[in-house]
Amino acid sequence: MQIKIKHATLEIVQGDITKQDTDAIVNAANSSLLGGGGVDGAIHRAAGPQLLAECRTLGGCATGDAKITRGYNLKAKYVIHAVGPVYRDGAHGEPALLASAYRRSLELAHAHELHSIAFPAISTGAYGYPMDDAARVAFATIQEFLKTHATPELVRLVLFDAHALQVHERVLETLAGG
Ligand code: ADP
Image (cartoon, rainbow, N blue to C red; front, side, top):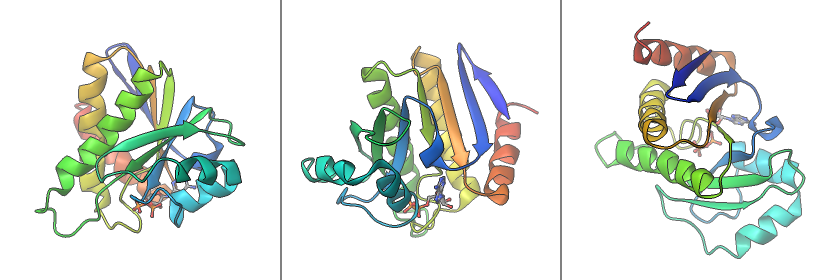
């Protein structure tokens, strides 16, 4: 499923973030940037050990922020390591921090003049963010960014399983007015 936002396309697909051929893929990293499970582990395995070597030079990353590295053995030229919040109850700044993780990633893609970027559903795995709430935050933030920036022209959300895709489709339909 995809929608147009000004001149850009926002699309949601089921798949594996490590296989995406976008200019950048986003890693749902933790603040150490030294690797972990889930998406993070999969990206480091696919990119090779040089990725961890570069991450070691970055001095970590605050929650809600993002940092960019090369992609090494990935198809994507860059990895944008974004740190989403651990979900407690939604009343500890989680929505703002999640929105910030998406916005900072898009800002880095824009600053590097990238045409396309693929995101996983940040914070919805080990960090426990309810999937539909996270989807609303992700779409609202992406939409707002694309209204005011001409690049990236393609933003793809890559959902790992059919259920995650379904949840995101439902949320995007309401946003698109459908
Ligand atoms: P976080 O710690 O930010 O919650 P996780 O990596 O635990 O990050 O999970 C984030 C989301 O990514 C979850 O919805 C999980 O199912 C999904 N996911 C796990 N592996 C992949 C993958 N290879 N490609 C895309 N999404 C993935």
